Structures are given as structure tokens and as C-alpha cells.
Figure 1 (cartoon, protein in one colour):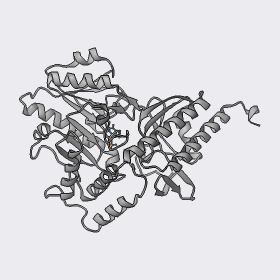
Figure 2 (figure 1 turned 45 degrees about the vertical axis):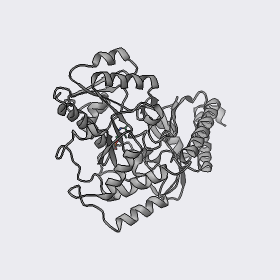
Figure 3 (figure 1 turned 90 degrees about the horizontal axis):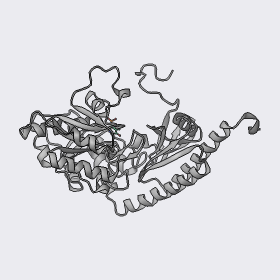
Length: 400
Ligand SMILES: *Cc1c(COP(=O)(O)O)cnc(C)c1O
């Protein structure tokens, strides 16, 4: 077996890619695949974007790693740029989404502590959420399937149904520190939290001195057709986490916060050996250059519209296979009526890479700069996937 010496934590599809270029992946045999997964919303500018390759190679030939014991100008620059395009004043760099969320959780607790409320440490999260796989973030995620077998759940997290205003309001007590949500639940099956609900949560936080944390690890950095999902919603958090798309494929995470929150995290309160590493910062800065290019979001919006209308077309052709299409921008979930892993396997056979999600969805997360013709080819292959699944579902006699 190809992965004998790795922990058996993943159910892998038996395929490996040797090369990627833009929205295309190639395997050992040279077969090509349209990439509608982007390594789970990570390679947001496709594979081996020339500007990312150039910046990474240039940095790699200068300096790799020095630690946060000294100043890293590239991290100052990326932090300043992230602050200038968001509500945030300060940034902590980590290496993954879960770590960015750990920083957010610790910051919220420490903020309340420094304000004189050491007993305010509880954080409300929503059902069906996903915040990561560390002990803290599985507790925040609050789903049994992620918690089972790992001993007592880290204390201080309460999970409530998404749209239940009454229960959420009743949760607030003198132990409450913050509310933490994904504005669009990605892993949970691309579920968009309503604008009305976001406003309700913001008001609740303001009334009771709680912090609002947006986990934009998946929705951030352009995925929804805006820089962040919060900018589209008009509801501003106090803390925001990003990761997946931020490095264009290089591991990186970041926790953004207002100055009030960030100053609570004084010297020695948090750290990361690798966080803010020059290689990661070089990539993050290029991703930001690309996102901020003129007309980028206009072009992306056109592509998102095109995908949506094509997907509805496919849904109309295969109503027995596709039951729902949802999402914003290029964060798209289609709910299928066969087991989603069957759908995804068939897609690999048709040369198309997709990602699964909760609620039996298949996620479509193409590169944000995917060329129109690649999008078209990917959607054509998606149609072939549906045709093939329909054909296989027919009684044998009709296949002949
Ligand atoms: C992927 C994801 C995480 C976890 O990120 P890792 O880099 O795997 O730790 C957390 N929150 C959300 C919303 C995610 O989509």
C-alpha cells in the first residue's frame, strides 16, 4: 500500500499528481485533471503561478527562517497590508487555520481577563461548524464525530443551533466571552449564515460586551468574490481568522484583530516558532498583490455567475442527482443524491477534482483566477460525471 507508514487518518483516493499548472493537474501517466478543489480552497491562484514561484524562489535564495526573536520586515509588511484592507489593526501569524483559531480563542479570553473579567471565558459556536482539529478547536467545532475518543472536551465552548435567536440570547451570562462563527460554513456543506442572523449576533455582542469572531479560514482572501465574507455582509467582527487561501499553497494562518483585542496579548502571551516565516510572508504578499489587481473581483464575479448558471442547467438536466446548489462567489456546494464519495470518485475518472463536504455535498472551489475555458471544460466534465452516474444507476438491460 502506498501509505503504509503514514497514520491512517485519511481515506485517500489512490491517485497522485506530479505536476500542476494553473487549474490543471497531471498524474504520473500524464493524464490531465481540471482542478475544482484547489487543494481545499488553498491554491487560490492555481498551481505554480509565475509570480508566486518567482517570489518564493527569490526568498528561498535569500533567507528561509529566522524566528520571531528578531524583526521580520516581510511580516510587518503583510500585517500592515491586511490591516489596511480590513477592520483590523494588528495581525498574529500562525501556520494553519486551527492555529489561527487558537490565537483567536486565546485573544478573546485574554481580552476579557485584561478588562477585569477573568470569569468570562466561554465561547458560543454554532452547530455544524468546523474550526479545526486541535484540542481547542475540536471543542469549538463541537461535533461528536471530531471529539469522540479524545478525552474530556476542552471546557469553555457551547454549541447552539444556528438560527435560534432565543436560545442564543439566553446563553449570554457573566461567563460569556465571545461568539465564534463561520459566516459561511464551508466543511459543513456550504451553508450561508443569513445577514439577519449576523446582525443579531453583532448586536448581542455589543449589548453584552462580547467579542465577535469570524472564522474566515475558508471564506477569506477572495473566495466569496469579496476580500472577506464580512465585507460583503456589512457586519464587522472584532477578530477574524484566515489561512487556506492566504499563502496560495504555502502553509500560513493569520489572526486579525482590533487594537483593543490585540494589546491584551502582551509579550510572552502567545508565540509560534514558524509563524511569520519569510517564505510564507513572501507568498502571502504576492497573493495580496494578485487579489488587489484592478478589476480582479469584477472578472471573478463574472466567472462565479457563469458557474452558477451552468450548474443550475446541469441540475435541471439531472434533477434526480443534484438536489441543491448553494454558496457565494467561488465557494460552491452542490448537494447530491448519491453518496458524495461515489460522485467524487466518478469525477476523478472523468478527469475532474472535487472536494466533499458535510450534508452530502460536493464542493466546487476552483482557483479564483481560473480561465473561462478551463471553467467550461471542468463543467463539461461535471456533466459527464452526472451522465455516467445516471447510466450506472439504470437497470443493466437498458445499458446495452
Ligand atoms: C479548514 C478550516 C479550518 C482548519 O484549518 P487547518 O489549516 O486545517 O488547521 C478551520 N476553520 C475553517 C472554517 C476551515 O475551513
